[in-house]
View 1: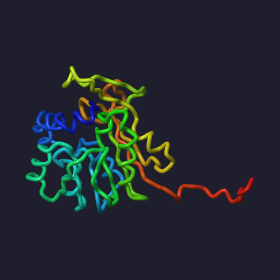
View 2: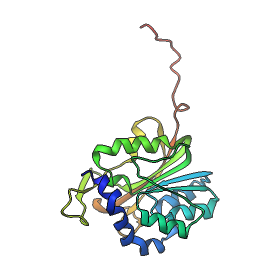
View 3: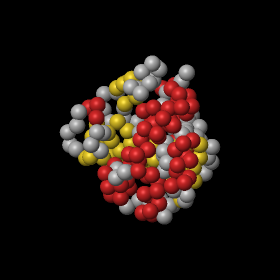
View 4: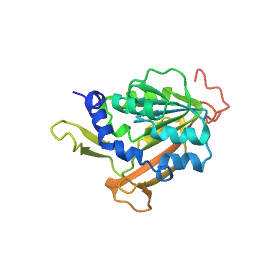
Length: 227
């Protein structure tokens, strides 16, 4: 079984139930993605969060900006809670590798999602995410930020062959040449605070990227056809 199937089928609901109370105590001021948006004064018209749980972060963005918000989430329990708690958010059942959406967004948020994706589906997820970021729109990628790529067995399901994959996921988008880095904030996972020195296993980062499919290419000025 791919670990994507495990999370979509059961572990997504279990994660939400384990973290439900913590989400109710969500600290807007300590959230790295929200701090980046505030720092750069972004006021997107349409926002998508992939792996949005019950929409707690999107609700904070709506309160600040009045944006139209869409939440993609595999957990039906999280969606049911989100619809009751935040009725102005549109919830869609789906995952990073398969999103039944067509229109692009001014801002797409993928925070602590990509480390769960089965490695065989990672590039599929990257393509799905990119498809939904408008040209000149923004992508916010948050996840673990180790110096070295790391793989850690998922302790909630020790009998299953499931891992957390820690790496700099912003690099994948940056290396495409279609995104450029606006900023990155780093901190520690345990304390959810900005810290200059953090042990590698606890270092997290949130990257704000801007998508540019054409305007950043330099014109060569020479016609080399036929050479």
